[in-house]
Image (cartoon, rainbow, N blue to C red):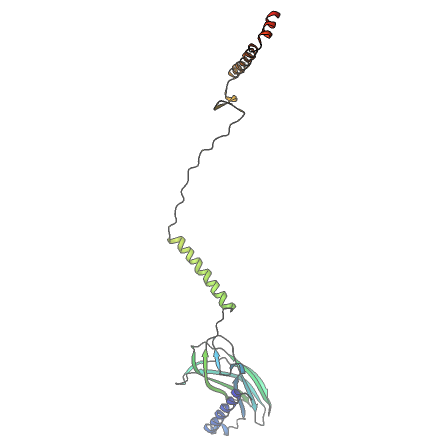
Amino acid sequence: MRLHTFIGYIIGSIALFQLNLASPVEEASDEPLILAVASFSEENAFGHVVNGESNRIYLTVENKSDRNVTLVNIAGAFHHPETNALVKNTSALTYNLPLLEGASLQLPYMFYSEFKPGDLRLSIWLEHNDDGNTYRVMAYDSIVTIVEPPVSIFDFKLVSTYFVVGLLLSGLGYYAYLTFVPQPKKRKGRTAPQVSAPVGTVTATGAGGYQEEWIPEHHLKKTKKAKSGAATSGDETSGAEMSPSEGRKRKGKK
């Protein structure tokens, strides 16, 4: 038997014993003897209640009477450990299960916590019905520790939350930058005029050149005649440079 379960049985038995001593009227009312003991699982041996998560506790219920009863629901409440003031009730879980004479059941009960980390007194009870009369049996009454869930960098919810918040802050920062920071005006640069490429052939003479399309035709004819005359005088000069005998022959022929 687990140590925590054994301690829970002891607490439940003491609570039931005190209830029987303090309530002689209920004995006269012929209340059936129902035992209920609650304990946390082995993974939660210290009885930690984690905020924001589903906390599970198991109730072992046993019918010690000679009658059949009906398990109505399981509920609980958080109280201040010193003043016993009610902090908050937990949600009631309805079962409506028949509990036969001498039968024993183990039932799970889940509850949530949204409190500041610290110690609180947790009470878990069971309500059963017998011949139209409803009775309450205390199953757990002890101090528990409220803790925060462990934080992991691989937590998808945490990473997605940070990502969405980062996008919102980036968008707001960019909008504020465009709204409150003056933007520099763009200067229009002067474009250099484009030089048209020469059309047609260009005839170069010496260091300069000209385009024949822009010169009248009669000037072009004069230029061509001047070039042909220069070529003829060049031929005569070459003839004068011949030998004297060849020159005499040509004169004799004349």
